[in-house]
Image 1 (tube, one colour):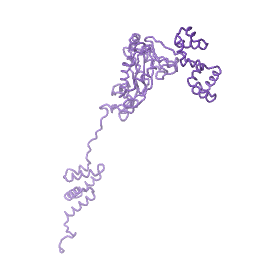
Image 2 (cartoon, rainbow, N blue to C red; image 1 turned 90 degrees about the horizontal axis):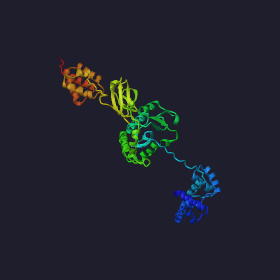
Image 3 (tube, rainbow, N blue to C red; image 1 turned 135 degrees about the vertical axis):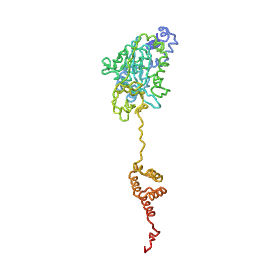
Length: 468
């Protein structure tokens, strides 16, 4: 007799008026044991506070009005019927009145070795490179041995799904005959449950690895409870206290955690660790093909004017001779391969977990070099004849905007219009005082010309005799 059956039997005999000694004799118990059972709070409450028929009807009415909420039932009983009931007493009366449906027995699934594997994803908040982001945790487990693999992705499309399933098949070194999934559009093309239509590309990929997808009915997550339960364990055991520099670092640590913790820890339901159970399941797995299918996407892009092509918001360099050309891109999980007319022209490491980033390979984009600036034609005609004039032309160039063609042209005209000696004398004087106004320079030239060619006295009168 179990303790619950024993307690119920003692309670029944006491309600029938059976004495302590007789109860102990009928049940084969000691009187102290009967006394201890009768002193238990649950038995004492059942003996004293059993619900009667009138109270049962009232509880049924209040239960319907409160939609089964025991807290609200207590408020209604206190407000309308002046009954202050403790919460524990109220819930016990609800159970005795059988107002709530008893919980249904939980089902249990049994799997043979190599019969089934289960796959699912769950969004987790992780810190990568010092920034909190939402990443998709993809998981796959063998239903018999519970051997587990989890990996993280910034997003989970069919491309990431094929990459993970191939990685999981290689980690398990084989596959089961079927893979149970939920009704995700990543794998399904339409329908749900038994009427689900698997996307052709996903069905072909699964066939190449030796298994088929099976979608469970909607709102039945217990069908794949083998993979549903570990996600909570990953959040509470793997993520806390760990930092990750990148998605590659995150997945490397997740793989190590699966090997050293998740698959090495003994499970009560198995009586051993998943790794030990996997040894028994391994001979029943379907072997992988000699050549596993390659996981990649292929599409065309036009090289922009900056010499880049865009893939998933990130940009990758292409040789600048292909600007404006259409190239073919092969997107692998770890690399980006770029071909032009079936010839490889670039291979980049794929940028994962970042947006609007660039990756440039050496030699793709040459730095444009400007030809050395040639002096203007007028400067060439002015220079080379006298050092003073060369220095003045160089100093004049620093005070001009652009090439200074108009100013140099006027200086050349002054040079050609006046004699060399007064012109050079005026230029030397202008250079000494930093005079670069060509109108004032011409005034200086005229003064030197007047002094050199005309004999003028101080008052501006010549000294020629009157009778000359």
